[in-house]
Length: 353
Ligand SMILES: Nc1ncnc2c1ncn2[C@@H]1O[C@H](COP(=O)(O)OP(=O)(O)OP(=O)(O)O)[C@@H](O)[C@H]1O
Ligand SMILES: [Mg+2]
Image (cartoon, rainbow, N blue to C red; front, side, top):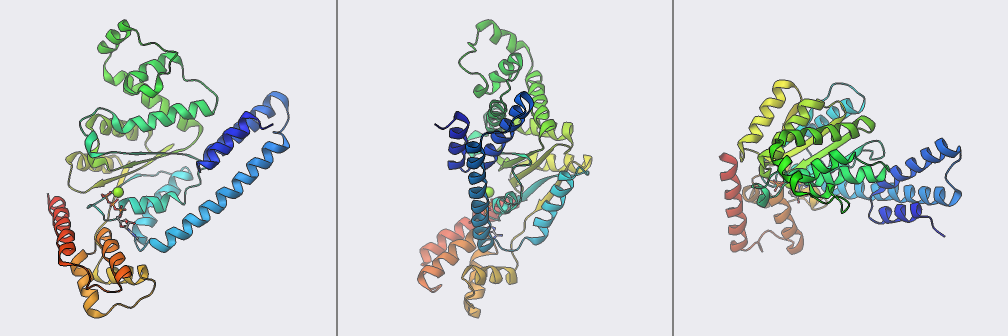
């Protein structure tokens, strides 16, 4: 019969959360070794090895897929890698803020980079901000705190109940059924300022990163609520990229706090900004011809592709898919061109702000 550990590993593998499988297996090996001086049994080890093979295969196909789609951005990609390598090898490193207009390829660059990260050697956490959340408090931290809570579950330790309760007021996933929230505690917490809870949050994250280096990806910070942003700034100041490496993405010029976090980061040397620009004419054509698998575009089509897209990859992909399906630029109806153009204008306006 399969052990609980094996079932858990299988579930995570199905979910492609291979790093969780590694954590579980390592924890099991360590505990068995320390407590009994033995190794995990043959079945469990065989399952672990099977999952690691699946992981390698999955990574390979992802990279292959990605190589096909990802174009250019060599300089920006190398900057990211350079900082991450510095972080990984314990040298002084800077976290990164990737900015640029909508559709310029911020997420594409981050995704490309994530493929390089060996998730068995660090804990990778990811959170995104959404437009509707700007008005909420600490929304961007919800997902992270959820992951923190799960991490403690996985390593089989519990977060001290006082801290758990305190953090639970801001992040409900921290309070499980065993803690009934008492009214008097609410009153007490009204008096305790937010910064006490914030400190508990920072301490907890720091504590995890003392055990395993942590990478935090935060998408679309132009929609981030101010409390969340302040907390990320504190984390950056406190940790100074020693055990936590962060990568933020955000649309340029849409939200002043981005400028503040960038300015502060460069003043203290904790955060470096990478600004993604539109592709040039030549790059746009090279992108297009690669995307269309080596088709050589006619001069007229080249200039039209550039005119319609202005070198923004989001629009390039839209138009190129159309060309691929219809084998011509012509079928791009005036209506479709209008829609694309008005979206383009929207982008340029917001980028100008
Ligand atoms: N360097 C690239 N190579 C290939 N495709 C790209 C590249 N950059 C962007 N794309 C494609 O362009 C589209 C938009 O890119 P992406 O989602 O990364 O933009 P973004 O900057 O994150 O936009 P937003 O601000 O809306 O989040 C996607 O389909 C993406 O795959
Ligand atoms: Mg994006």
